[in-house]
Length: 146
Image 1: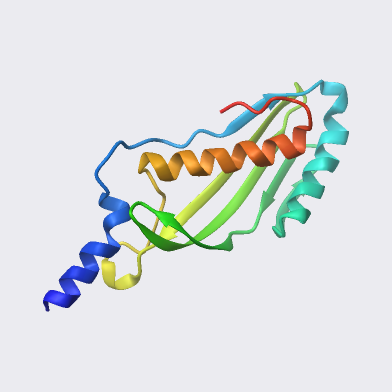
Image 2 (image 1 turned 30 degrees about the vertical axis):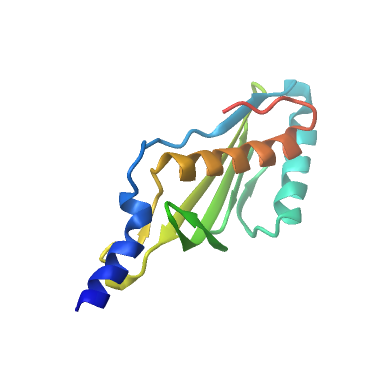
């Protein structure tokens, strides 16, 4: 019984990790609206290069969304957890470009938590950095901002 309790406490470390909490912000930048088509094409190339599978590709709406995919084991609070990720990219007529990585971590059914969206600040900041890198690939020389 003590072993089960110890394992449960360790697994919940990334949910209950002491420290600051944060809400994830999407990465955003602006492009020249005349470059919207070129940017959409580049976003498709970036999605494919990362191996993400498209769920939605709507050029006229400027929207790309990937399927939720296994994204491997990642740091989750003070431990490592399996993760899954979906990516949404929007390219507005106005030139606003946004990248949002929706990531969830898994603690297992026995934890009573299962899949959850991270709020522990170091986990959130790591996701935001990954988003900014994807945005920089898409926008080229445009500066990615969180």
